[in-house]
Length: 566
Image (cartoon, rainbow, N blue to C red):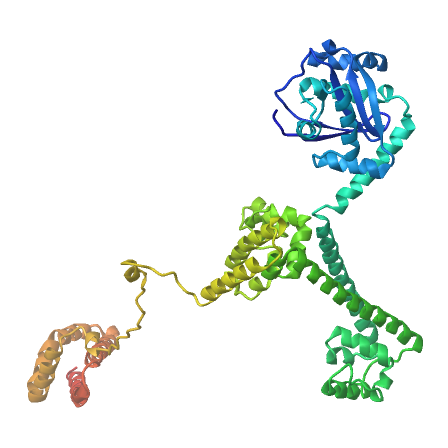
């Protein structure tokens, strides 16, 4: 016989509840022997006897034999009915069947049948339960597709087949058993402890929001009366305690604040109260502000108590996850997933971006970079990392956290050794990243991995003025030497060179209208020449300066002589 049962639960048309077990098996009923059927209801156990087994040979047409109560009574007949005394007994029988065991009442009923009709076979809906019955009571059990259809037919006509039990009583018994079984499952549910964490972290977030709103309102309200106090006392709880204790700012000078504030702050508050620029308020206003301060103080105390409760629950339920990411982040991860078991089903990549789903889908839609972290960003290991390495640390932390979650959810041990070891490894890896440590390279790769140090080499170049001149310097020197040694011959040569120009002047004299123009032209030409000579002489050294003066004097004399000749 093959085992592999599946729980099957059904509520009848009139509200009755019937439970059975459905499974597959290779065994089949023997048509030559009588057959009994074990059927369990919310009101008790029922034993039916099959009257005509020939009608059960065709499995597909068995349902036709149970269309009406009259037809059903021709196929099966109630032989014995063991009624439950109360709902507690019904719950014990139901839980025993869920666990694959035989309850005391069922064992008594089966022993009676085994004593009277030991040769008959017992048709059951659960093959696993059949193996237990055979071992305990020594009854041969049978299970097949035909038995499954037979159970379905009996379930449809259970009110007509079981006599002596009203429909109303059956409905009441089924309803009571359903409630009791639901409470039993909830009581022993392995996920029920997660509900406390989910509710606690949600309430903690709500309290933080309410506290921020109340404190902001209190500071703004009392700030009209004593605006300087808000800048002096930065702690919100101490601010509310001072306002509630003192009230009007006039009382600060005579009130002792040593229990709430340090001495330096107390002296500063008293000094500011004497020169405050705030407006005057009535006593009724101060009373309302004091009531608001009472609310802030009470909520703050309750928040501290709730945080301690959450810390203890997290260390009891998920100690390894708490060591890695902290109580608040771990509780938010569990609350976001729904339960610790659901969180254990998530891979590390999902744990990493859990809480950033909106950014993830927006990045996928716009084809941009996906987020690197979600709720895990608030963990202490990620917070103390530089922005450059936050992505790497969050990825490694998510991988270790996924292992810790599965260990906490599915493991039997309740210690935090795995979380402590994982955190130590992450901290060592974080130090390596911060120190920019490189991996070891063996062999010839070391030489390739080394980078040459950059050394700045500057070359100082001096300016060479010799490149400014386009004429050779040697010819210039020779020219200056000739000018010094042969002053007069040079003047003669100049005259000879100017003769054709003089002839031009003589021709121009024949025309009296243009007498003065040639002189001006000559002067301009000579002035242009002197400027060109000056540009040629510019790159020469300071020794050539007296030569330049002598040459200019000679040119001036030549010009005067030419004017006299004209």
